[in-house]
Image (tube, rainbow over all chains, first blue to last red; front, top):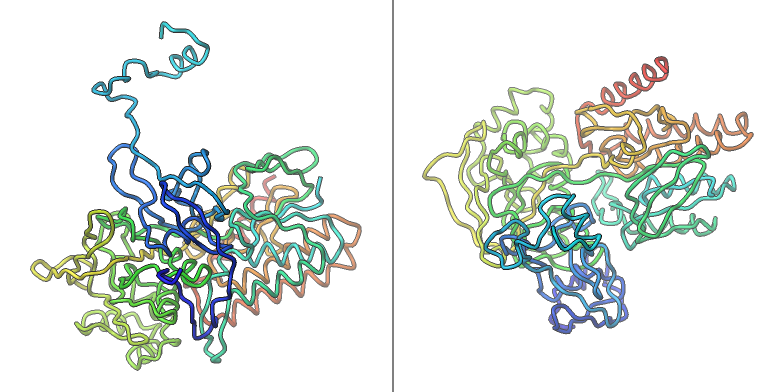
Length: 133
Length: 404
């Protein structure tokens, strides 16, 4: 915990109160934060800034607004995807994964591209189990 | 079915809930942030009187009162849709549907972006993000940074970061593009800066603020702006320099800044690279009003209030029966104004919910006077012309009601 980038002393707010430690993982690595931290604040305190990559280009992304509006910090938490790291408190044993590059639905180079629906009608047929989409 | 549902546990939402609980209405307050307090939580600045305005302390005061009155406050609840029903309102949230007779939307404000190339790199964040990290989570956002965007909010938060021991190189403008627009225009930025100059321990700015009403003086100040910047709390503020690009591979490593003309055009050959590991972008605040829009509330665009605001009157009523608004959703002002508006909204809801018209009327009147007084005493004004802006919305409300 000593290596954390914390503001322990503050001339107006005073000393940072002792808080309970919470252990969680991010992409398989174990990190510690404090009770009351969000995933975003706990990771930043540990020097982790890249929370996902852009689904299409693979370029790195981190927190931007930190209050839930921009949706830049979405991660996968205990299997649920699209979870905003800045609004989600860490819990003991929580498994967090970064957002990854995704297959492009309309990219003909992708090996599964021909199977992907191109219209909503295609999608509805596929959902209904029609193999001839 | 609650008597009242409040969306947003900031200063407006909490003080409204307190007023409603004092009259024993059943109230639920929801907020999507893990802690109540809204943007008040991160605030920390010194008033002209020398006293500190500490958002965490102010939030605790409101929470103590709310808890004494057994107010139901639920955090981590995101509202994404609102339906008007015969009985009142149904709010769709990530934790299911909530029903109430009256609804107060007190969602506050969000930050406008002032994007420059490279702004999606990790380590680039809004100035408000840095504020929450610094004062609420007590995390240093980096080793050394630069603030892009010079306005009331960014100056206040830059000072907060300094207090926390976070190293800032300087404050500069964003390079001009169709989105950054006025934020990249030195003369317009100077106009805004003069509104906080009285708070700055800088002779240049204090001198300038005395002439804040004389535009030619401000323009002169921009034309002869010192190339080393004007120091506010020891940190250079450059209204004649702009960040043109943010560099880095996996995260921020440096920025390129260049000198600009008094109109904001980059001056070729003046580029220099500065090593930083974080960048705070400050494009100002706008009212976060989407939920009022999906509820069907009419809107008006009022520049002086920061953007599109739901039509409302000074009692915080909207033209939709049972729908109220308070706080920054009605216009960008200080947390003190938001808190005072919350009390007005709460009392209006009480008046409209129970047979207490005569009893409460006096209370509403004095709560409205308190909003006006608080506004007049505000040490920081986010937008000039707040009064004119408020007047425009009040006229809209009257016009809307006479047509329907």
